[in-house]
Length: 116
Length: 118
Image 1 (cartoon, chains in turn green, cyan):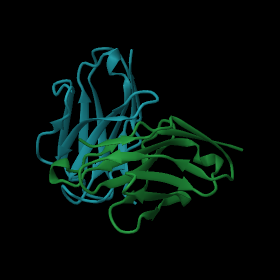
Image 2 (cartoon, rainbow over the protein chains, first blue to last red; image 1 turned 60 degrees about the vertical axis):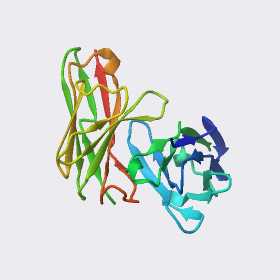
Image 3 (cartoon, each protein chain N blue to C red; image 1 turned 30 degrees about the vertical axis):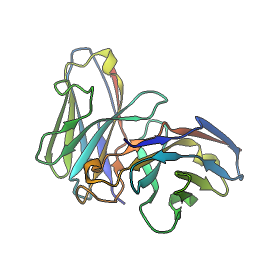
Image 4 (tube, rainbow over the protein chains, first blue to last red; image 1 turned 180 degrees about the horizontal axis):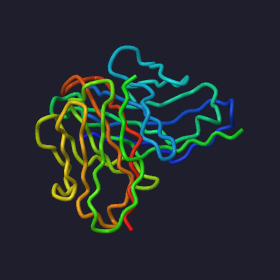
């Protein structure tokens, strides 16, 4: 069975400082990995994905994530956080087997609070 | 980018009422749609997967007769919460995926429906 862990319930960072949101995963075979952001009372917005290729993936709104196979991690990063980045962030994994289909397994979410 | 429209955004109704939530893919054909439930300050819980023209596949513990899902076309799926009770109050979110079973495209999410049963 596949699983995702986001070890931090909340991350606090000052505006302008680097932001990192951690994610580790467990899946058989090569994973498809995704990051989504959720604002209050809204659905999820897609930020970026890793399927194959370069380990560093660039996404929307200046976010990027680094796939590390040996550490089974896919941490989300932003060099300089904005107050508007304050939201709930979800890491998700999809297994590579046909049986996994397109189903995503989500981490528990990390709330990011960027203070001015 | 791909747009998924979910309607209504908020419903408040009396216990015993049935509530229908619509999920539409506006600019792409959604071969698969997913329905999630999200409790306050928690992650998304997958309720069911629906493929156009076939019966939905429900996750363990989700009552099929309680949460009726219809995916009649490549752009529309509906979730009906039958005889809703206060414990069904939650935030329901749909998502849509295209290009077949093993697409590497992300799921695109609607804005969710806040259901409150009095």
